[in-house]
Length: 192
Image 1: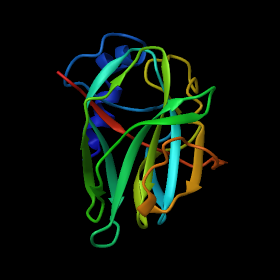
Image 2: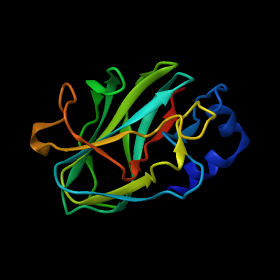
Image 3: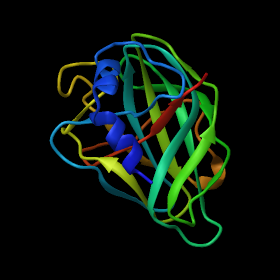
């Protein structure tokens, strides 16, 4: 399932997008551009909440945001995704969150959301797991954010905390430990 976004990231049109070109409806891309290492499976445990920075140069509205589950969770287990505002180079207020996404099977899990990412703005993308699961991730230090042409402009600052899944995502992010592990990969489809 993950082959399509990777292939698109390698073609010239997507490289144009990564360098601030126009983003067209239906385009598919990820929150990172691999520059030296292939995607890998990032493991999550129950109640784990990871949040990573996402800097946007060219604004766009997303039709969907997806994750690619590589190792399924137990029957009936779920995760949720969230988009947070930037607050002085750290995650701030929760802007929107997904419904619960079943992660008890492998493959693409889709959140249909019409969220508009504003140009030249930083956001934070979060994934909150109810159970042990692994999703496609990018090794830290081997990727760059959408819209920037310098390697590691998006430093993929990653924070991890333990948040009881039953509590949902916090209205304002606080705490967490800075991590050096893989950054979760989010797959975006641009809205018409």
